[in-house]
Length: 466
DNA sequence: TCTGGGGTCCTAGGACCC
DNA sequence: TCTGGGGTCCTAGGACCC
Image (cartoon, rainbow, N blue to C red; front, side, top):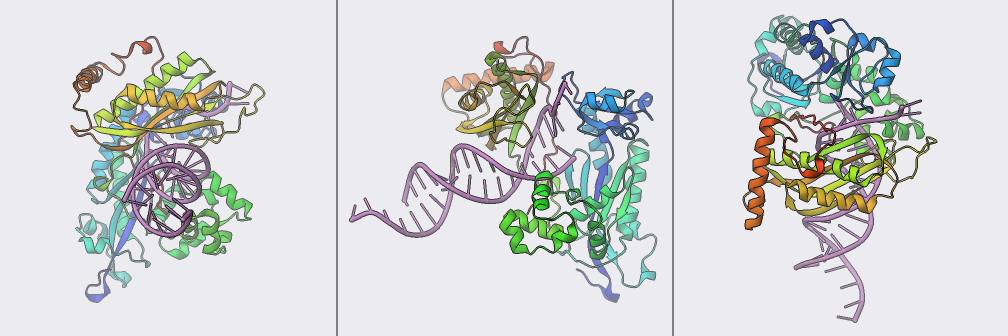
C-alpha cells in the first residue's frame, strides 16, 4: 500500500479477459457468410471421433457446446455449419489482442490462447468526490514501482479505473480486430475472483467483484465446480462428505480439508472464502516448458501391432521435431493408451488411467539418455507400450517426453556416428519445415493417415497453485 | 454412436548413495 | 555388526486447466 497525502492509496487490481466462443467468432470475423449462423469448429480433420473445438453463440442456443461430439451437435442443431479449425489464424488474432492489452499494463499472464490475466492499479481516494471520471485515463500508462506490486492490499474500492480500462479494451478490440470478436472481462482483487467474475456474464460481459462481502454472496449462489481449480473428481469427493455449496465448505475446518485433500485442502479452504494470493506470472518470467506430448485417438479400435507401431512412430517424430525446434533434449519417455469399449459397452479391464478419463488404459514411463531423436524416443515408447499392453483393442495412444533441458553441444555426443545422424535429422527438418510435415519420413510411415498437431506457444500453468 | 488433444502440478513409495 | 538418517532420482498414479 502506498499512502500519499490525503490518504490516497494504490491498490492492486486483476482483470481477466476471456474471449467468447473464440475459434467460432474468429471464423465468423474472417468469413462474413458465417456470421449470425450456427457454426461449429472442428479439430481440422475428418476423423470420426472428433469433438467441437468451439461453437458459435447461434449454435449454443440449440444446446451445442464446446467439446461435444459432432454427431451429437448435429442431432441438436441439424443446420450447424462445420468449419475446419485453423490454429495459425487463432494465434495471429491472439497476438493482435495482446498488442492492445500491452498498452494498458505490462503485467500480463497469458493463461491460454483466448484468456489473459492483467494486473493493474487503482488509485483510491477515500473521499468519493475525488475520484474523477477520467481516472482511468490517468492510470492507463501509470508506471508502478515493484515494491508497490508486492503489496497486495485488501480493501474496498469501486474499481473505477479498471472498469474504464475494461471498456476501452472492449471497444478497441471491436474496432481494431473486429466487431464479431467479443470478450467477457472480470474485475476483482485477485485472480480467482476475477476469473469467476468473467464467467458470470457471457458473451460480452463486464462484471466487478469488488470486495469480500460480494465474493461471499456470489460464491453462495454458484456450484462448487464453477471455481477454477475444482473439477469433477473433487466435487464428487466433496459431495460424499455432504458438501454441496460453498456455504457448507466454509464450515469445514482447515484440518479436515488438509487431512482429506492434502495440500489441495488449503486451496479449497481459501477458495470457499474467495482468497487467492497467487501472483500474475508475466509471459517473460514464465518458466521453461516441462514436457512435449502428442496423443492420437484412432478412428476405430485396433489391436494391429503394425498399425499401432506406425502411429507411435509418427507421434514420436512429431515430438522430436518440436523438441529440436525448441532446442531441448529430454530423458523421460511416457507412453500411455486407452483400451476400446467392450462390445456390450462395459469396460474391459480396470487399470487406472493416465491422464484422466472414463476409458481404461495404462501408462508407463521410462528414463533414457537425453535425446531429441524420434527413433530413440520411439524405441523407449514402444518398450513401454509392449510391457503394459494386454492384447486388447485400443482406441487411443499417446507419448510424452519430459525432464527436459536445453540442448548443448555436449548433449549431442562426440561420436561421429551420432554427429552424422544429427546432420541427417537437420536436413530432414529443413525439408519438412519448407514443404510441410512428413514430406520426408521414415519408410514405415508411408501410406498412413496424417496426424495433425495443434501448436500452442502460450504454455502456462492452467490452474492456481496451492 | 458412445469424450479430442495439448499441457501443468502434487504425492508417495522404493532404490540408491553417503 | 547389520542399522540411522538425509538427499535425490525414478516411477506410478491422481488431479486440474483450456
